[in-house]
Image (cartoon, rainbow, N blue to C red):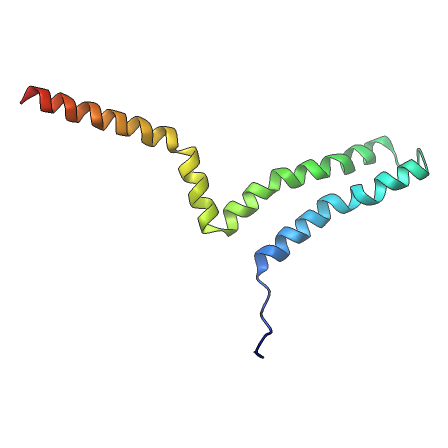
Length: 101
């Protein structure tokens, strides 16, 4: 490989592809529907509109799948209440044992 030329990582390319697949139909159809009303069937307009929300739905899964750091942060965030409960339980058990001695 030549100096200064780096290979593209697959994750940003996948993220960009999903973004374009989800938002490009909306960015094309919305201005078109303003200029030419009733050009698209209502069902198609609804599907195109919801593709943007599908992108927002897919992003967390893409990040969790591709990034170990993001995956660890999500796990810690979602399991925080479990850790706090276990710490309280441990603290209670320790203080209970301490009082019995």
